[in-house]
Image (tube, rainbow, N blue to C red):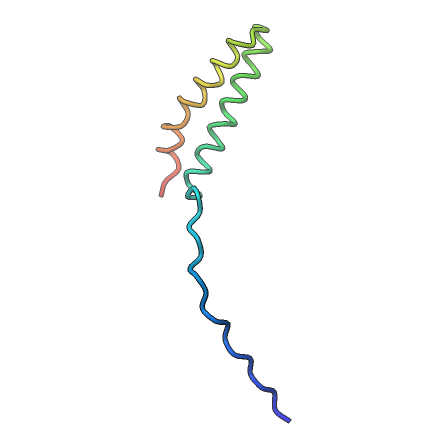
Length: 73
């Protein structure tokens, strides 16, 4: 007896596009890491929560363009 080949699967809707491209997700994730490190170190240094939050946001904002230029297409 011969095996009957299985038919190919029926074509379905196209795969949905991701919410963010992988490059953008990596840049934002690394920038969040840099901002978190800056905020934590500032908090340990000064003990000021508001200053640490501002330092973390500044670290995040400053690192996004740098990481964007470093990580190529």
